[in-house]
Image 1 (cartoon, rainbow, N blue to C red):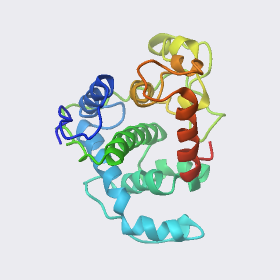
Image 2: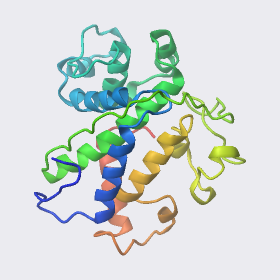
Image 3: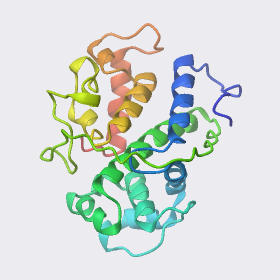
Image 4: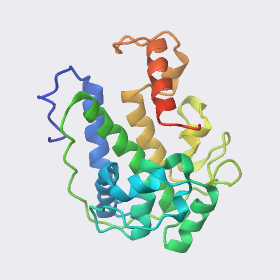
Length: 247
């Protein structure tokens, strides 16, 4: 399926969802902060491969995922450590530990690169699950745009809350001054803030397929949504429980 066409959908799809999906694919193809455009698309491809990875299925059944040896069913030229990171996030995320995250630089993946990778995985998986739910073919991945990553790291990032450094809740300056919508933030938003563009990608996508940060203050429902807020949160809570989301 082209990311410009939803003609085969059995359900009406809001225009803002189509628009945000298209914008995300276009941004994905661009060089990021720590990965090239080609590498970012390869991360997206691995996100899809992880769903049916036989090694991931075996590891999922193990008492400890860190004691199982094997090779992933890979569909890209990514480094082995990057493939493993993508597959863990998709198939066994609730057993990711601080020790494993902190060991990644020894495998050649900086903490900043891991955060960008995680942001890509979350966005791609969210879009793909939208399609799977509606019985639609997954969208074609875009062609990579040449160029080098910016290697931009926000100066105010600080450790202390999670497994990776984050931007503080208050007092953001410079390029990140307006990163928090209307000053609102939470750890679930701050989690990707070591790579500010990853936060911007997720906020834009989440605003379309769920709610904007500002919209979360509306406990009744939005006129452009087919279900009310209580129904939305019931579904969200059920999905979260099934996915064993510890957050």
